[in-house]
Length: 339
Image (cartoon, rainbow, N blue to C red; front, top):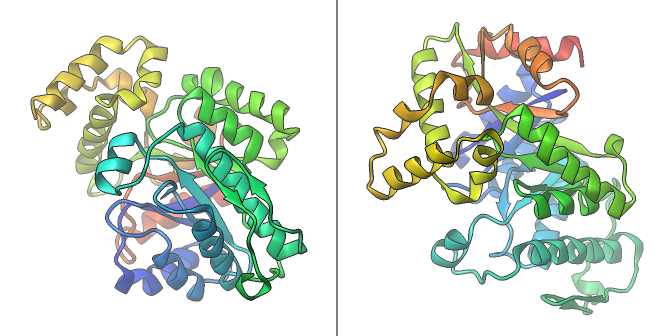
């Protein structure tokens, strides 16, 4: 099990120092999210100022970008990082696509599948000189003059992961991708009884094996020996209450019989009762969705809880170089001992 660092927000001016610090501590990978900034730009700096970490997007919102745009971005980052880049894609929800990005929304699973296929067709042209001829419902690509080809990489093409929560996207991850980003709002029951079975259906369709696939997720981790433990617990309750109020994430609540709570949280969100919503999250739900222990004990707690379900994990915690370095070192060492 690899331990990564997830940057929910970032500042380009801080990326060189942050990348050097993360690699020096021993993180296996660094992920950037598309929240307040573009997720690709900071990885240019991270690639320049690191040597061994994987670097990836978790996630880049797909539909505001064309397959060719994504193909060029990923190829350039793969070349710059000497093959360490992972392209992580996600659909986001309809409202964000249409009202935040101004992007068209239609048949998201099918459009994501075509995007992945089109990207790989472009890469096949660049890497193996295979003529570009991708014909789909959303994309018809057949023009790639030599002047516009990025040419072959000295490494294999980048792996592609997608964010997936519900069954059709999980199957697509299994059939078409090298890995999956599962949302932090999950439980072991959800993984065992829902996510992994649907991913395995995808493996059968795509002729793939679990051994060649990576399951990655962020974890709501609460280090009890951190001076910020109380704040972190409050933050986790707030995050769980927010995501449980959102219909797109209802599958986890349905699986556990928390439907009444999910609907109540949705009503509270519509009324703007954000400060009261975390109080609705019980200790039982926290035990299912969060991991709690000292920095040093968390790796063992995570292994005991998840077993072989996960390949890469990150903590839903801010990473600030120089802040709690001893805690991060202790947790990273715990993962490395049984890597």
